[in-house]
Length: 529
Ligand code: TEU
Ligand code: CA
Image (cartoon, rainbow, N blue to C red; front, side):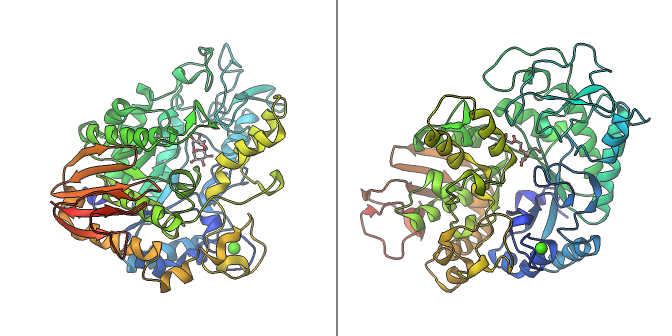
């Protein structure tokens, strides 16, 4: 097999809890995913990335793993997982898993033994009784402090995320050995790679106080350090024997860090998820939104396109609000969703589609905190309770940014339960399910879903889109144009009709009926120059 097969792939991310529920308990599961494999294959994608399906107390929906070698009963059994690999394989689809190894759940056996001081687990985590100078002043990713006191060990432990997500101590060589066994376990089952959760923060060089900052005080002690590069080389070595690939979720990296992390000679990661284009509508932290600007958005994407030989392209995932609600226009919901699809599938790199993006799912329409499940949102809301701000503003901050925006159940049809479940869904279903759903869009040749299929098959057949050089031609307030090989992609990301003569042959447009000499509002076209 081509060593760099993942450069030709399109990845579809599944958030298993929210995808398809086979047994009516309101939680999506693996048999549910298997029942939708024909649908996934019909999109033309090559790889499924599964958000965590491991055993977990679900304080952070599976990003807190209590056993890396078993499947959470909510999701099914190991036999179900094996069946998923086999059934996907029949359809030419590979499975990659989420690798969450910066931290475990506090219910993991390693932590339970560690807090009792049982060897060899005693120093599997960062305990204040083993590290002088702790607890320190570091602040965490979900807001608030990073040390939790444990009455059993009579010491505190470090957690960069929620208190039940203790950070693993990679100064202890045994930790890597255990992780390596886990990698091999899944690779032997036929898993073809990993999306590596917050992978650039694994190694902490010291636990001294950090420089005081607006966010993440202490981060200079763990962001993309040499110790992490060393671990990545080890992960790479194990995976290379299986022809598997990695995509790192890398927080606060710029293009220079990303080059180090992904350069083929260094043999670390294959690709990374950058956050910079996701930060265009934020002021320092995501809870402070500012007006989105296409010019800045394209400028950031352009920098990454120019500076990296190859990388991921994504507009959505389970941590981000829905792209059409954020970058598109609700008035031109269908057109702007198609335009975003065009951007996603014509840039240089490996595209990642998040479940529901292909039908234009929108942000959750929730009205109160009671409907929110996201641990991050709940934490922030708690912190906000001591801040003097009108309640309506606090709610707006949560509503616009909550990760639950992307986590509402997949809208398969317009019925009660949206075809997702026959029971009570774990998280509310968006009321627009009767207008936005797979069943309707499958029947409609002009739908967002149909456009995704057309565009994916167009991309696969186009050498220009698969491998062509990238060059930005125009970065305007209303219109963007870039070249991929001999193709020009023109996007009108405004609510206005724009006068524009097109030179060359228009191969694809988001519009059924084009208006000669104009770009319709939110029209995107691909032109052979
Ligand atoms: O996300 C890491 C991460 O950086 C996010 O916490 C981010 O800060 C925030 O979600 C942006 O809103 C990964 C996973 O994708 C996320 O779901 C987990 O909660 C987190 O790691 C901890 O494992
Ligand atoms: Ca279920």
